[in-house]
Length: 201
Image (cartoon, rainbow, N blue to C red; front, side, top):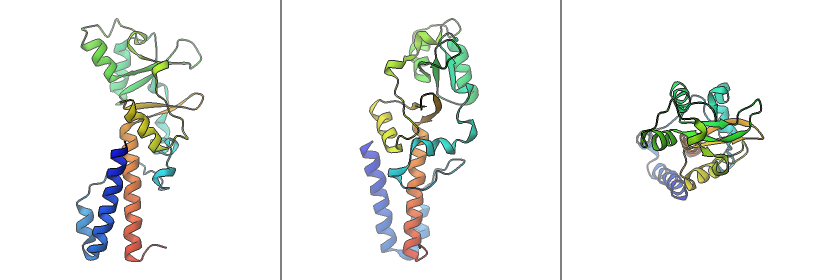
């Protein structure tokens, strides 16, 4: 995590120096760097101030729904089918009943290690048998900073973190987090470029 942040800041400094040394070649400098964008850009407010809530807003209205979870009593086959259908890599697992009490999480990794690698049947195995239990579940809240979320995900070697504010409000992936960081850095580079050109007020 710290290496990624240092790398991003180093890239920003390299670009700033290159722009200062070669003010007429800005297009050539920026053309060397690709840009990752989401369907809705993350509002530019500085990397230190960016929160998980800002990232969830870029996902639109479909950030939460029954497609995001399953029950402990569901078959692993149904859970994996749901993940494939919705192009997601994990599902929050809820305890049986009307209340939405969290039991854990099931991921593609759980499926590969505990079903495929062990030769078990996904149709006859319940999600509760292979999920990661709630006591090992790493979650974030909507006001968690994006840098804290990245640190948590890196430290725990996970790719998905449920967003819990008393109840499930969404899910963020490491892809969402990295995309937000890249977009924020792109915005900062744009403002720096405008400042150098005298267009920044």
